[in-house]
Image (cartoon, rainbow, N blue to C red; front, side, top):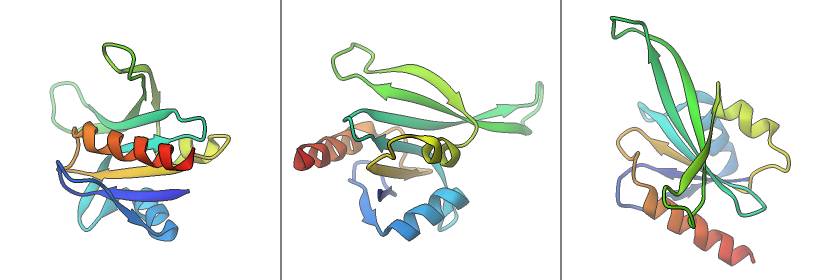
Length: 130
């Protein structure tokens, strides 16, 4: 599995060695910034996006729990992202995925909600593989 790290908006993600990528995914942080989004390229060409969702206690700002919204990219559809589902942890979800994903892009806080450069990068990686 190849890992990439996206640290800034408008910039492509840079490749990491596998051990560093796994460590950042496990810790959920890198250089003091949280991982808040992941993009996953599967062997069949499917691209999934994981986005962190914090659930707050009613009437308070206290975070009760964190879950992850997973959506699949469909470029031919008007909304492009669909097939919504929730998972408790992206690390566990990726470990259970068969066959294992080919590429994981870890997106840090401050670089999120910038899909286009990541999708272009994953699409080019997929084209190189074909």
